Length: 172
Ligand SMILES: C[S@@+](CC[C@H](N)C(=O)[O-])C[C@H]1O[C@@H](n2cnc3c(N)ncnc32)[C@H](O)[C@@H]1O
Image (cartoon, rainbow, N blue to C red):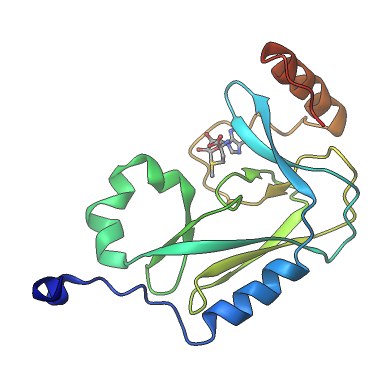
C-alpha cells in the first residue's frame, strides 16, 4: 500500500465537506422519485408531492472531471451527456438524481453548480404539482430533439402507469 503512495488519487474534497453536506441533505426534501417518461427520453424525475417555490429539491454530490481529462476522454463517451459545466473548462458528473433531470425550455427547477464544494443544488423555480416531471434547462444547443415540450403531469402519469403495469409494480 505504502509503495503505491505516489499513485493515491486524492478526493479533492474541501474542508468541512462532511458536515456541510450533511446539513444540506437534511434540509433537502425527499420528495422526488425516478420515473420512466417515454421510450426516446428514458428516465426522468418527478415530484412525489407538491413542492413549493424555492425548496431545495436535490443535492447532488459530484465527481470532478478536470478540463484535460474531459477534452481527451470524457467528451468522447456517453458521459458527455451527463456533465455539468464547472470552472475553466472543468466538468462535473452529478451523482444521485442530478444526472437524471431531463431538459425543458420552461424548466421548473433552477440549479447552482458549486465546484469548490463538489455539488450541484437544485431548487424549485416555481410551485410544482404532485406527479409533475422535474426539468432543468440544458442550454440552447441541444443534441437531441426535444420531445418533452408537450409533457404534462397527466402525460407522465399515463406513461408511468404503463411502465409500472409492464413490470407488475404499483407506483406507491
Ligand atoms: C442527463 S440525461 C437525462 C436522463 C436520461 N433521460 C436518462 O434516462 O438517462 C440527458 C439525456 O436525456 C434525454 N433527454 C433529456 N431531456 C430530453 C428532452 N426534453 N427530449 C428528449 N430527450 C431528452 C436525451 O437523450 C439526453 O441525452
